[in-house]
Amino acid sequence: YQVVTLPLYDEDSPEKMAKIAGQLHDADYVIVFTNRVYGTIPRLTERYPLGSKYHELLFSGKLGFEMVYCATSYPSFLGVTFMDDTFTRSKLPVPEGMDICSPGGIIIDMGFADETFTVFDHPMSMVFGKVTDLTQGEIIDLLISSQ
Image (cartoon, rainbow, N blue to C red; front, top):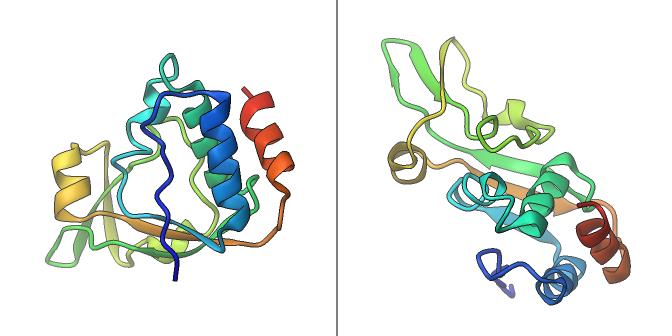
C-alpha cells in the first residue's frame, strides 16, 4: 500500500488543488481518521474556500468516492447511547451510508461535542472507496470552479 497525506492545511491555492486532484485520481481510497480536519476547515471559509469545497464534494460523493466503512464507539450507559454530531456545525452533508455507524437502541443526540471527545475519546473513522474514476482535470474543475 502507498499512503499519501493530502496537504489540506496548506494555504489554499490552485496549485494545492491540482496536487490534491492528482492524489485523488491515483487513490483507491480516502481515509478520514477523525473530524479534526473536516471539523475546522469548512468553518474557515475565508481562509480555506477550496479546502471547504473539497470536504463538501467528498462527503456528497461528487469526487467519485463513496463511504464504504465507518467506525466509532459512542459513549453509552445502561443501553442508552450518547451520540454527537460532527457534520452540522461544519455545514457538511452527512455522507451516504452513515447508518452503518449508527448505534442501535436508545440514542440521545448530543449535537456538537468538543474536539476533546470526538478526536481523542471516540473518533469516527470513515473510509471512502473510489466508485467513479474521474480524470485529474475533472477533479480540478470540481474543486476550483465549484466555489
